[in-house]
Image 1 (cartoon, helix red, strand yellow):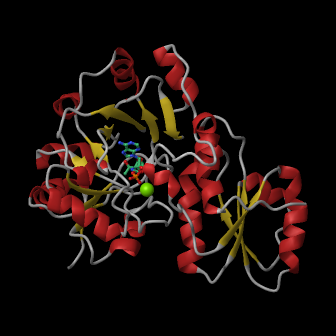
Image 2: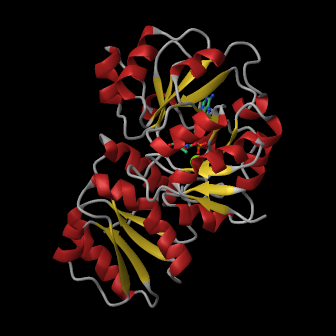
Length: 339
Ligand code: TXA
Ligand code: MG
């Protein structure tokens, strides 16, 4: 099949494809999603097929309004309503208990809960409204690979496998939404994102469990997706933890007989001597730009160079840094450069 690219002005054509059960990738403020009608079981099954995604890993339901959530979910708590008011549209996904049989098991992975998100992208909100249905949307990458932050990334992974891509340029946040579980006794962050635990606590006035608290090594992760390999480029990534480790890391890189990749802020790239066998990829100036560029950098070395080893800068593990480090640790398989 030919994968058509639609600009936001042609959103109605993209919506017509969704309404007839076809797959269209869509932009959000975080990463591109792979869209299908959430109420059409055969369309939802095609999403798993196109991505090569395990069928027990449930999908996020993207909505244009709260009323759609209320159609499927049990009555929302006061905390949920406050969070919706504070952060929607935006990079916060919330997991709610469902009314019986409200969504197909293909959407929920057979769970009695589902994840809902109201993305902050005008073209995609128009897409959902014009298709007149909520849209499931896992990240629009081949399962296991870094998430796509441009339409070109989506095309690289899914060209010929999906009907279309709604192209609204590069995404702004760059790492996927915060996933907050509101289905149990205590709110729990299952995946860190741009909406932080501190911000959530400030809105609801109660403590939020974070990943570190509730996923023990032997425990089954609560977000089914967290047990699978993620964000893994073909290259090996080495995390460089501290600014003062760069001279040693670059000295080590210079001794390797192969080309190497270096992903770091301009500050690091300009204050260190970068060896001739190293290709640089700028992460910009801070954790915001680094989060926006992380997946693009990993994809750049995989698809446009022969590079098999990448040194990549760490950030402090708080605020947006917690989301950045969560993705970087998975990309690197927890491999750190050690001095
Ligand atoms: O920013 C994002 O969230 C992007 C854009 C496209 O919206 N979407 C995204 O979807 O990252 P996906 O499918 O790649 O990640 C969704 C995560 C998975 O780890 C999945 O296991 C978890 O949310 N999840 C979905 N429904 C769940 C549920 N009912 N209970 C627990 N975890 C759930
Ligand atoms: Mg994903």
